[in-house]
Length: 526
Image (cartoon, rainbow, N blue to C red; front, side, top):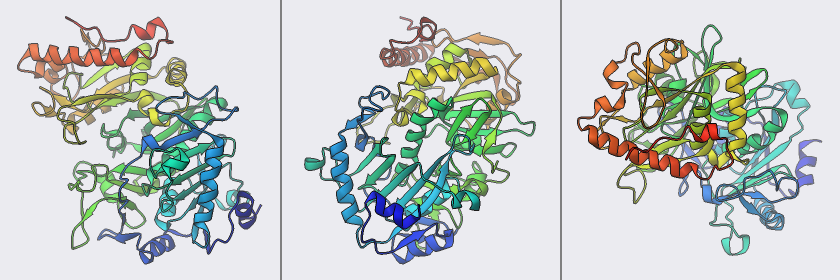
């Protein structure tokens, strides 16, 4: 079906101009001419997304249909919406786009073509179309000739929902319709909504094909050894996977099949707050012409100030994976030998690195712990524990235990070592202690990946029960056990027990898991 027929078939009428698969240069030109963004001194296009500078989890819905009803983990994360409501919003969205220009990009989600999903993106903004052009996999000529979209994403930031009529929570909405194989997005310019909506689709579809979908980055060594990095925003997932001594497979979303690991995307979406060339040279150099940056403060000379979070702490850069030197362009690797769970513990009590059993790995995977820091959100005056199952709960349509069981099976089958790495604080909580040095974290991760931690001596943490190495190359041994970095050992135990209680309270909702996984819960020491 040609594009015009396709558009007519889904309800588009009276479109002004349809721009299909424009080049990066043309998309940047259109965005500038239409006032969507401005070019910075390094050539990147800066987009200010206005009110919405991040995802809006309260505005995400899944159409409740018989075909998916029993498989979705309904609740605060996966909120149902009626099909009739979707139809009403969609019809008004189509009317809104009449006599407007639209931008179309045909891309793939999934580097392994056995499992990839063809996705057609229809954007109101040229800048939004630039984003998906750089973030998703660009098909070759033959694939484009035979392109038949399995899913369609329509993003119209200028169209607002009416909560009183549409049963939404605000003017913004992201609605996934599995029967119609469509995602509609409105009321928000934040480009990450497009990326994560398709990630949610993959997280529902791929398990049926025997693939574990994962919110993680991945890289590969010169000997073909693959490592995975799970972690929530701010834990170092993108930073640690961008390693000059290893090749990047992808920075955020992957599948683990019987053949190995593959990237879902063709690009990276790096967080930029406090970005520096010294600490993150690959990301720094990737921000150039063709890169879309979001909500970064630009001075009068056109230079980006990455230290300024005036618009948001969630500043971002979207660029194709080939902007990272030596990246694995084909987006595939073998079975991982090392799995790293990253957490930024602002309580300062978790070890900087510890080894996990399979059951502990499943426990921490389902917990998905990190900290929100004081000052990052209104009303937060001290560190707050936050738990996001599978290190990406907002994107997981199924029950977290479903994905954890798939992970456990793969850890067993492919003999993967799993480590919990704390990139947060030591010597005290946030405000008292110090953030773990990136050089130490890199050294510990390198040691884990190289197998140097397999045969060292370990000691068990009395509360969290994880195994702590007593030595690690290029890391002072005294910092490996976190209690040693605190001046007041009583205070350490108080904070550690407080965090343990939070872990246990959070895990009460997972009553269906085995006793072996429940036994991985921390022990509260009175």
